[in-house]
Each structure stands twice: as C-alpha cells, then as structure tokens.
Image 1: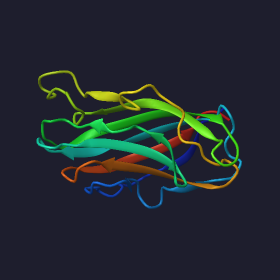
Image 2: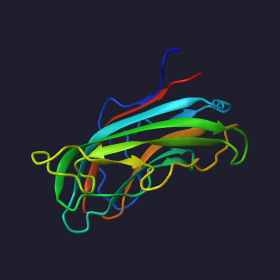
Image 3: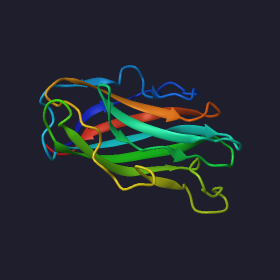
Image 4: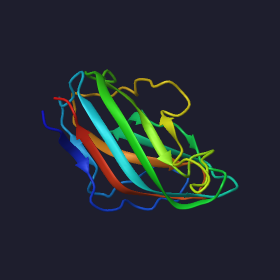
Length: 183
C-alpha cells in the first residue's frame, strides 16, 4: 500500500515566543479528519522540523501536542531545555501513532511514541565537543500511554501545537508532515 499524506506544510509556521500553547504550523495546515476515518490499527507518522532558541537562566521546557478538535491525542509532555543558551538550532520530532480504539464520546484513542532531537535538549554537548544532537524519547520521562479519548464518529479538526513554559525562547516549525502508513 502507498503512503498517503494527511497534512503537510510548504512554508514556515509562526515564530512562537509566548508561554502558552499555540498552533506552530501555517494556517493552511490544520485540516478536518472526516467522521468514521479512524480504524483500529491505522497508523500515522508525524514528522516535524524547525528551529528553537532558549536562554541560560530559566530555559523552561518544550512541549508538542497533536490535537483532534479540542482533544490532545498525543503529547510529548514537557521536555527540559538546555541550560546553555541556544540560538536558532535545529530540532526534529518523529512520532508513530496507532489507533487503538474507535467510537463515540471519548472511546477513540491513539497510542504514540517517538523522539525529539535538538541541541536545545537538556544535557546536550556542544557539537564540537561531543555527539549530537541530543534528545529525548517522547512522551518525555514516562512510558508511552494511550492518548486522551476522542469521538471518531464526528469530523475532527487536526492541529499541531507547541507550548513553552517561559517566554524566554522561540520556536519556528519549518516542515510538517503527517502520513497515513496503514489502510
């Protein structure tokens, strides 16, 4: 079976600097997933790249989430940022999502795990002195779990969001892609 593109970007998303959750993809990316789309076992691959900056004191955390409607169906959880200042360094997020259940109310669920790589990740060596880039498995510092339940019998708006805990850094998403891997 061929891979099917569900959503993608061809330009940068907004540069986010506030300490609040916000869509990090261009305004044309959020799309509607039709009612009845999900099937148990259907898989998505989410790939996103961009640049991030953080400061020495109070670098805060980075957090990505995928939403269907108002429901966060996958969350990286808060990932500590480097205590060494980083300016416009690259990041890469790769996540595999599998539909575990379908249904009304909060019955439908996705299971996801992956990795976030960036020099902005905590305890990452300077590229000239050590291996890089460092990163974390996501969800951060916990075993993967099934995401919050959603209603798969209705259309749901898909969005990709970023949250930083302090307004001392910035993030821009350069590339975003969600692919359907299985029927």
